Length: 111
Image: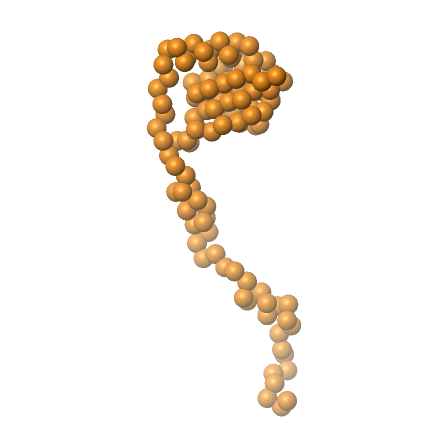
């Protein structure tokens, strides 16, 4: 035992040197972002626009709604409570997401 160093590193500190290390911060998130399927925004027909407008007229804050909207080059579906709703500013909030009326593809008021 004469060859053993006197200042041996405690096991807890030794374990840290083998912990996973991410040399490129944000690289994994960037890869996940690339995996998303990006699509162009679809044109809404006049008939569909009328349907959306009629549905929007029936929605009030606190109503439960189903919504499909366009954001960040993808379509997102959400079901939740209309938290904020402003006809004059043409937006609503659902689950903390700010959605402009122009980005709405489908909306339905739920019971």
